[in-house]
Length: 181
Image (cartoon, rainbow, N blue to C red; front, side, top):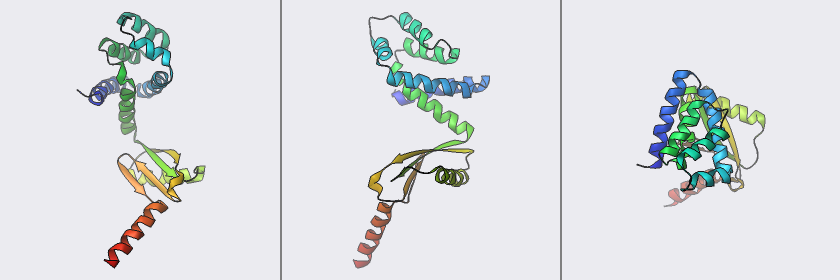
């Protein structure tokens, strides 16, 4: 079974549990921290990857590192240790985040532009896309892409809106070539 499928199953189970207990907001916050730790702390990753360290010792370390976290988060991590699945922590957090965002009516829009967007521009984009996607909240992730020449390229989920100068020039070129043939 692929790691993505396994991560999704764990995320769904944790999200269902969090929803029943009405602690989804707390869990998303803690999982974000867990992901940061596993992405940035080579020591804990190296320790958890060592085959000579027992599962019990690994679980004790998780208890110590995440001692103030919700038991559901810690127990999920311990279950991943038991099943030798620590490699899916990031994917599990991403899947949980997707479930959380869907339930809360939140969408993430990645906006590619030649310069950083002003706060007013971000608010205008958020308002426009809230209506278009029928979401409660749109979070703008602005990425600078100087290759665009001008305009914006916006990605929300699997949908891409390309209003970049590159795209407009390519369409004009295509139209001119089509008309001359």
